[in-house]
Length: 156
Image: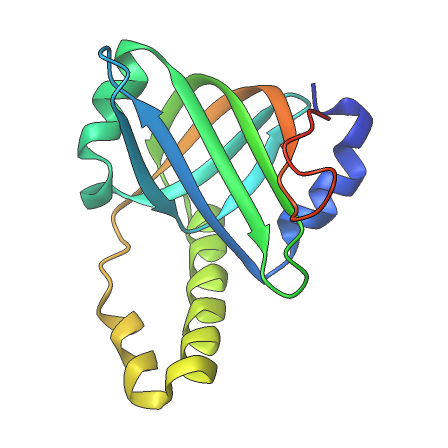
């Protein structure tokens, strides 16, 4: 699934200026949304994203019950946005290299919040409990352009 766009998507997902959220739904199709703190392409058709354990309670049950995942990733400096949809593959405790991605992401969030609200507000980021964290891996089945403009919502 990612083969055709792999090089471009790897570059996009490696950018430090990303914000991301993910969604799951229960067996009654009730949605649940959360914030991810890092993302990487882990194979030719899989993506992993990283989430603090304390923020995953509802989602882990949803992943096991129906496996559907949506991950939306936005580049804050130009609003280029992609949504990836697919099926849950596995979860594991974040390894050191995955924790490094979380740390890079949170450092950017801190910078962004300080720019918008000042140092005092930025220090609130340090209070987030990001560890322990899990890597959630899913097989990408669909990719959508969600960048504002005429191509928004178009399947890639």
